[in-house]
Image (cartoon, rainbow, N blue to C red; front, side):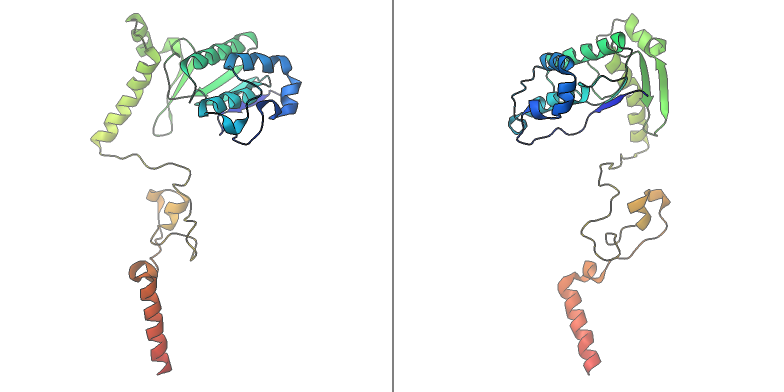
Length: 241
């Protein structure tokens, strides 16, 4: 059974000292904890609610890395870190792969300082499929950049891939869809049927192109609440007459 770790979730902001967060875990690996604390410049007496975003991020990384791992998943972990801490962290992670044969999967949009860091690269296209994967040294465009002594080879490689997608979208006038966590959720203010007025039912659950049923808006959408009330009173009066 291989141990896996993940670092990338939102850091805590409660009024609690760093030394008291996941205390049992910290006490289980005191030497490793102290090395990471030194590397990241963390004060164990810090209280979380008093920290900057960058300081919270460092604490978050500490808690994610203190337990030795065989597989580590990183999602934009260097966000909010200053350049020195970022470089120290990348060097420490590289050392983990060499000395402990650990595997690190690093998803990022920030490529500076990564030219000699990865052994393997996978490019995920905007269509959700693998565009290229393999050893970085086997990529022809990367080799061209290296031969030209390009100062930012990983950045240039990423731009080479992504620029083609961008130009294709521009040519077809295709717009990027909203894809945040609420993009396909039901409207929490809706109380009649569970779907926002006029919203395509399948759009809320699946994809727009798969839509089959469209629910019409309520009277209040067209007339306003006051209009609905007046209509109700008028109809009621007719019934009484």
